[in-house]
Length: 85
Image 1 (cartoon, rainbow, N blue to C red):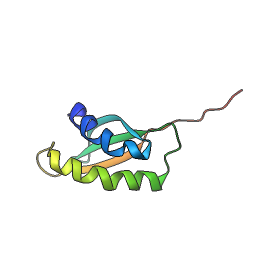
Image 2 (cartoon, one colour):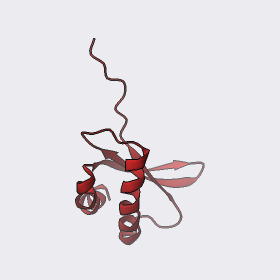
Image 3 (cartoon, one colour):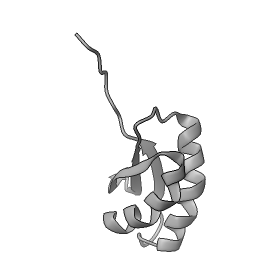
Image 4 (cartoon, rainbow, N blue to C red):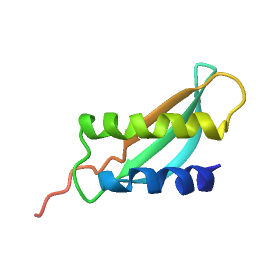
């Protein structure tokens, strides 16, 4: 599944200077979540995630990867606190 998503999504969001760094399924309160984690050399703010989501949503619908209901969660990779000390 991860390779399918990466192969379809990365070319579509390349123009946004982002790429898929991870794809995984999780379950919270008996609800499946398809998680797509985005990364970039640039800061990924909410506006960039929204822009990417508009491109990614129809691709995921077309791929039809998960049976039944699920939540699609598209988010940026956490960078953590990086500081030079």
